[in-house]
Image (cartoon, rainbow, N blue to C red):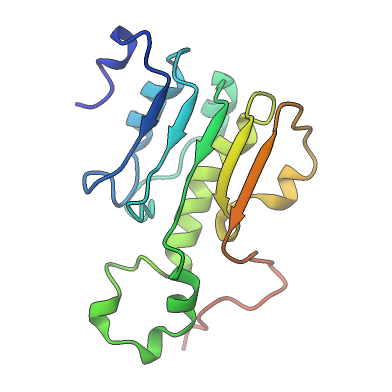
Length: 168
């Protein structure tokens, strides 16, 4: 069970999820273990295409009560996923894998990332996030006194724009 050893590694500051075990998301149980350890200040979801598609939403109230102290949060998605999402009807099935490039996936990311991102606005110095799934409007209403680096990837999912796929 990942995370039970983390408190016993006092010099450890950064965790990176890279690989197949968490390709469909980092469960709240694992994330909670990391957020309560004071010496973990950086979480990187890696380049695994992590989509949160099979993960329950992170509990916003519980995260807010924890007052996480992360200084760095990085969540990089596949750079071509929005192009694939727009052209899904024309692509062979083998290009796509398990709903990784659709609105459901982006909504799942949003339900996990939003409470986490909003809760670290006082301490974070570096953010790398996908524009499709971050709470940009809510972020604009908060002060980010320590933020030095903000890297946004992808396309802004404005609610005034139509969804990527219309249900037939």
